[in-house]
Image (cartoon, rainbow, N blue to C red):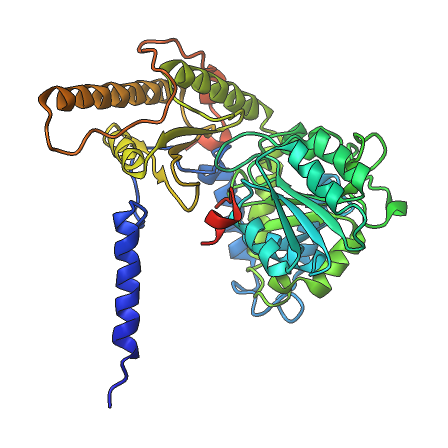
Length: 467
């Protein structure tokens, strides 16, 4: 008798896909032409001829193009040792351990450092990789409202006398809202209540801080002298001169697949932490190593990125200018202060309509909907890079204004005619003040001839994060 399983299985999948489609949450893979505003290639290095050349040279010189095993078996290579030493110097830590992705790094780190007797305090807008690492650790979860220091302190106070380890986990630049964690205050709370701090610098690596070393480095939470870690502190990340409480930072995660236009991620910290993770982190232990020639790509990207202060400054200025114009137009850009600018639309169908409008205008933009963001605040996520020109940003602002004007006009026509047709998408935005023709003070240095131009899921509440 034929099994009923295949038919039932297919029916269940079709039902789920149909439900997502009805909610406006069914996704698809597609290449979108136009000015790329979906990319995390913040410095434009993905098109760098020098980076391409370094990779080609490494492939040609490689003894093997596959790693053949995990790093604890046959997959280790001196290239990884050299890269980890260089990245630790860049991060200002005693050591660094390379993982195959940022997701693997966060899972490996959190499941190694926390267990059922421990407590983790997680910002509500942390990335899915942090959420999943916390869940898999089995630790007690305390999800505090985004950047709410009072709520964080209240949770720490409740667990002050617990015997287990307490860890505060946060991104430094938040991947969907583009704002920055209050690191000084978090460090102070960590010191007051005896908690460790884990920072995810995914969207800050190579973009923020001195030479792109991250926001923690900008606060001297890691060694300002590159590699001068105080070995007497064992597994500590910091040295003398750090802000109060920075000595409680136990690990900083830097990813390579965004501004470094490469692959993988590093957990940076003390030598003891590195050795511990080599022996404990399952996502490191049981993953086949990446081909060793990729270490050359990361190395080259790191060297290039450190010399791109002009591009970082131009990117920062352009992001500030675009945010200011969009706010004058009436758009809600949350609390963005970085190269990630959300344009919060509201409903799913309205966000999809906005993305489609911009795509027709020549911009590669995707709508961001639940479960990546909470219900009711679907958005466009504008991700600026050093490769985007001032003229393109001006056209983008004009296109968003045109979409707003068209949506308002359609809504008025439908109201006047009492049409039974679906109403125009409702935009969740601040009071519109037409800013067509507004001057965008973009810096021309973002369009200078550079090496790049020579040719980071979130949870707001436990309920909606359960996905």
